[in-house]
Length: 111
Image (cartoon, rainbow, N blue to C red):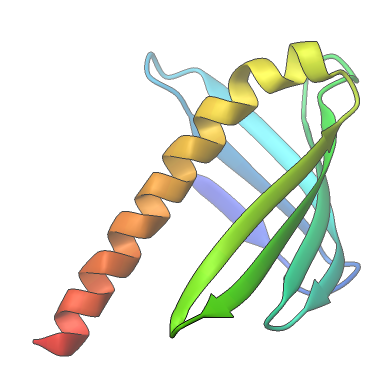
């Protein structure tokens, strides 16, 4: 992600660039609709310079269970067939990277 701008508050906006293999860039913009710490984040987003049907609403919930946090991601896509095509792989990669980062942080803190 060579560019990432965030105003992390309800009503705040974000914009970032994801660079795919082959140097193709995907610009994403959105608005944080709701932030309820530490339970939930709701935001909308859309790919810039793409068909208008690449817009989505996401709800991320966090639930503590036995000292661990469970994350649930729900999305509503305006054109599910088209938008879902790349969304699942992108979110899977992002969440795998988050898990690896958190595991490295956990190991560093316990060392």
